[in-house]
Image 1 (cartoon, rainbow, N blue to C red):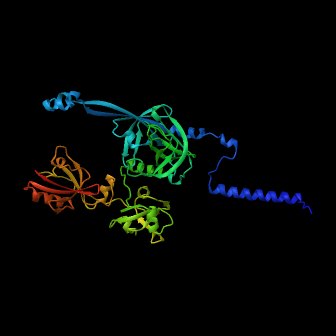
Image 2: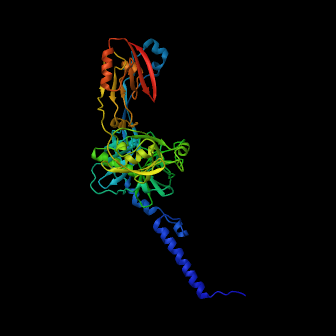
Length: 481
């Protein structure tokens, strides 16, 4: 028997089905605004309104730096001539000559009063800074402050009479891989240029020599001259300051890096207030590898395995222990020591951070105080003098604050050499900045005061035996003065 469907029932079923699909789509849209284009009209949509909104706040920066260099005739660099004449003609042929170096970069106006954020390397050593706006107006700029460790700097335009267009700060912690972004800057000095792409990766480290690294990676074309320019999201908010590219040719290969705006905000506040201080952890660790994950009975490699906790540090007082695996800070995932350090550094002082920890297979939540690295023990910076192999070296007691300034492990301890004077006995001994003095003439050195005492007691001797730690290795040497 052939079954016939009632048209009324079919219509009702179709309406119910459409309603269910519509509800599901509506619920999905409420949970996440990101979606693919659904029509040809949407595919033809343009970034033009977004560019018109943000491009006026991206500026070109031109810097001038006076460099002194000593000119020498090529004849007196030849060993044959040096054999007979030495450096006696150095005064005539080695007189310093000054030349002017010019460079360019980009910047972002973040306040209508003319406050600009750019890269440290764009303005490093500049004797004059000139800023050209989108509408070709030009201003001289003063350097408010600069932070080499994050490659960020803040400028202030002179003579601003009317409020300037500015880009609002976004939230780089809300950025996801695959988000659409625009990069705006002045590549190769050709003028303001806009490129588009997506966020290719997050929390990239090991890209530059900066201390705090957790870059946003993008395939939006970034070239020389784009440094300091804006990386903006689809809502027109600043999510990063373009800082570096990976290239073998000097041009864009689709791998660009931006400093996340949450770090920009912290550094900018500190530079403007003149008090740029960051919280410190007081613990050291390593990324969890596949082998470590197996031994720790983790379901997958993730987090930072804590190998050392300094006595009295925020980490210790917050309850962190050796063997813990830190997997998140304030619910933000961390997978390597750089990312953990970055997350702590972007938080506000005198508050607490919530550390999510795996301890012996169990999840533990810790509240860690956010404090600056302390000056304990006191530095006691001193320049060593006298007839000894350390003479001419500037030394100090290493402490967490000094280690933080130098961008090294804040758990480091001992007597460190900060600088070595030219033509000094320390230079002839081949001591270097960064060396730790471990032992002199068989006596342990743990403080600057102890170093001075040992040197005083041995200055009548011509023979010296020294042990230093360099790059984790102990080097020893015997010297006769």
